[in-house]
Length: 230
Image (cartoon, rainbow, N blue to C red; front, side, top):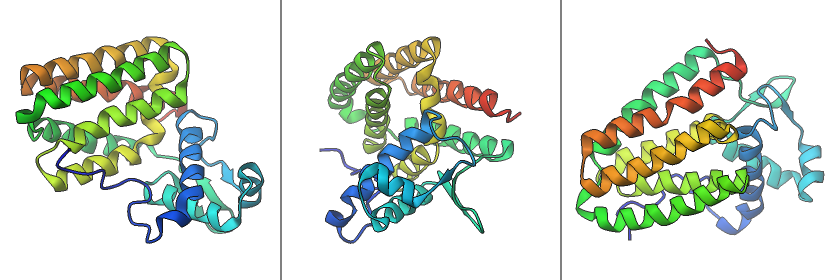
């Protein structure tokens, strides 16, 4: 069992887990819609429309908004309600710089004493990821990609660092999945995943840092081009 549990799942702080189940469903669906561009920056999220779409109540939709707000994917604006967050170029740069730091430190603090166990688990998840990409099942690929990376966070030897890694992974949800829609970039992502597994298996921290830091830049570049954030 990994030392660190998934401390920052969307409902981690909810007092009554049963009551947020539908909110979690809505949250995950909207997170994917934002990630794959089905919901665009500054697009309004209307409670009544979402209630109709998901066959649920305003209460559940508002809970989903709370979860999305918590990970920085929406904004609440006076006289406009809830909108998909539109990042500025500086916000994107700042987020990327912090993620680079976290990738480096995460590699340094990875529990390599348990690397055989981790490699086995990563290999299985990555097989699901590659199969989903081959079959153009983008949501399934995004979920497998989440599982691959959050599994790395779970093997971090520093619990506070693991919390930050989880938090910033969710903050970057709107960026991370962009590379999956591009065939050449998704192929690069697959190669990176294999290289990450290989570096862990070899206990090569320097190589792991190099690959994990390089792994996050293609999606950022795609996001910059899509929204003109230069």
